[in-house]
Length: 115
Image (tube, rainbow, N blue to C red; front, side, top):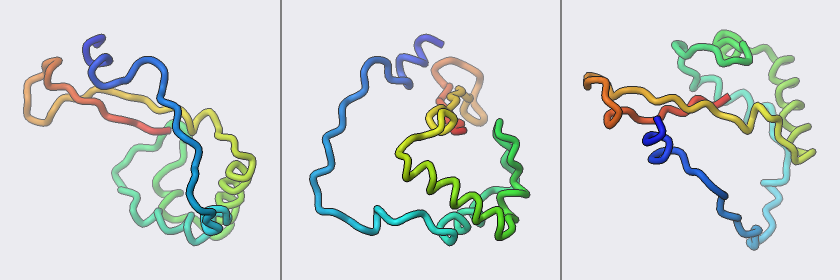
C-alpha cells in the first residue's frame, strides 16, 4: 500500500496558485440558478450507490421544485460566504484491480470516491 500511495497520492506541500489577474467577469459573480442545479440530474446513472449522506438516486433524479429551490439557496449561501463544508473537501480513494486481470499490486489503480 505504501508503494501505491507514493505513486498515486501526492505527499507534501501543495503548490501555491497565483492570484487571478485577468479581467473581471460579472457572469462568474452571479449566483447559481435553479436551472443550473436542475440540469445535472439527467446525467445521474441509476446504478450508483448512495454516498454516506444517504441521498438516493431516486431523490436526485426526480426532485420537486421545492427541493431544487432549497438546494440552490444552500449552494448560494456557501458560495457567498466563501467557505466550504468539510464534507466538500474530503474524498475517499480506494484502489481497484483492472477488469479481467489478476489481483496484483502493480495492476491496481486509484478510484476516487467524492463525498
